[in-house]
Length: 90
Image (cartoon, rainbow, N blue to C red):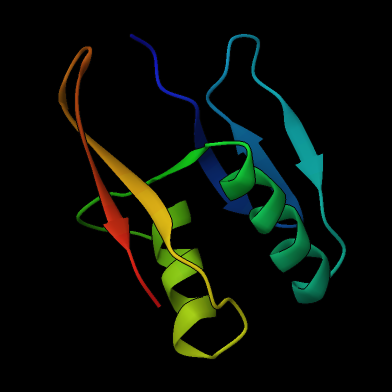
């Protein structure tokens, strides 16, 4: 089973890990929040990693600041085709 996930949120661009990869522009934080809500509703997970600024960290920051008041699914990989998902609540 393949998972739908957001692989990057950076510099006004949200990118998915779909095949083919899709890119969605956003102009400001309010636009990003609206886009993220649509992605959550469509069942997308958000990539997480132990370091850096992955999409899941961006969403957690929005939650911490009170700009995103919804749970989302984060995903991490331990190998090819081996992933773990978990819910992140505000």
